[in-house]
Image 1 (spheres, rainbow, N blue to C red):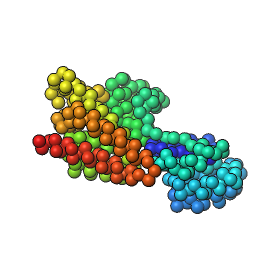
Image 2: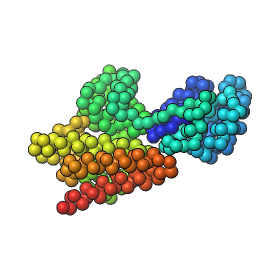
Image 3: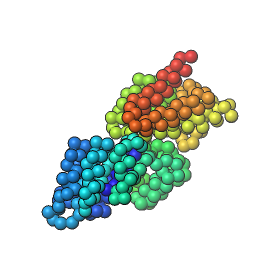
Image 4: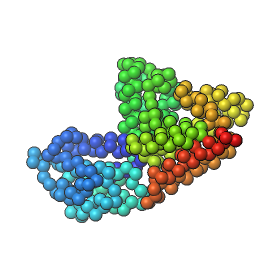
Length: 319
């Protein structure tokens, strides 16, 4: 039995598919694969005990597993089975009963699937593009590392699109990356973040609603928000240290801001002095920590944190 949990739903799906292929060789064998959703949890024991008509090992894959599956999983562990049980549980709390049960068992494994960032994300971007037959320069790599990573599946999709854009044996530069690649959940999340820090609560609310509706995890939104605030901090530091204007600071920040968003970024720099940005980063970090508590209303905490930034920036613009 393998439990895949965490905030990166794309990585959870990728690893689940790898486990299924490793066990039975394909993802569409109707005799050896039982694919269950949340409503099928009651069939786990039955499917784990069934035999494949064509012979060979069976796999039972359960999507959106949660603590409601704990009793069924406990029964399977007690009885044993030749089949492989793969549980996909995005957003599972750290104190989950299901997770605790799996982690205690010698016949099971719990694998955390969290969004990549920093050096690990850069390595993934380089290796994925190399596998697609293209290279990437340093500026483009830094820009992509700031845009991607919240969902492994979305990251891979964007990189495949970028490889097609530059062609076989091509090299991805910053211009190609900005022209071709959207943000980590389509453009909606970037719309929300830039609108929030520039003081447009209405646009931030609409864009955030769309992003969450498309499956973006609240913790992923908060991590992207923190990265956005940290980029504002770097630009604001340039304004404070070198006495340059907001527009010049926006153009100079690394990784570079997409040219269509330079105006919103410069507006945000005027709304957020350095102490306020530090305070905002702390608030987002605390919201992420609160989301991970058992029973916490993660989506509500995420909305309040992001829209709180928008309201604060709007007040700063009116002063």
